[in-house]
Image 1 (cartoon, rainbow, N blue to C red):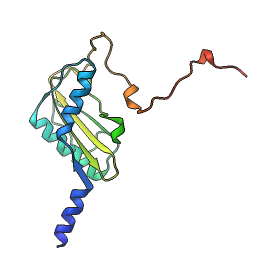
Image 2: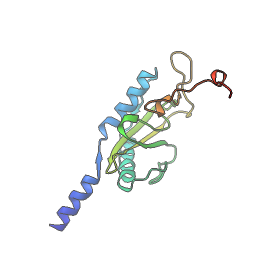
Image 3: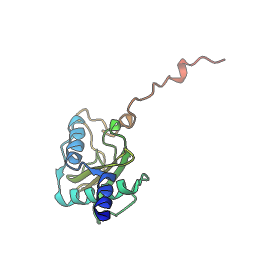
Length: 153
């Protein structure tokens, strides 16, 4: 009975929502005018394992946990759902990727994206502008008042 209870506790600590990982990343890429990543099942398996590992331990300091194999590049992130997907490598020129997200007991989504098959440089959107923007990092971006419009006292 104790073993069953312990298993239930471990299962409830982190809930994996892997299927949405690559779909969520590719939707962001589509909206940014980029081609989708081609999913690599081995990369998805690694991303899933690392997302679970980080969520179970509440590791919120970047690349903690198992290291990606040589030649793979990773982005990790953690945030509540209202932030959306939040990792590096989303806008890079890689061709293949695996992604997973695991919901921790603290309500944070622990995201892992691993990629290969490219140089890692950011791609340009259809408007020939760098895709990498930081506005997506804030759910409600603050309004910034230009210095020229401030009154001196």
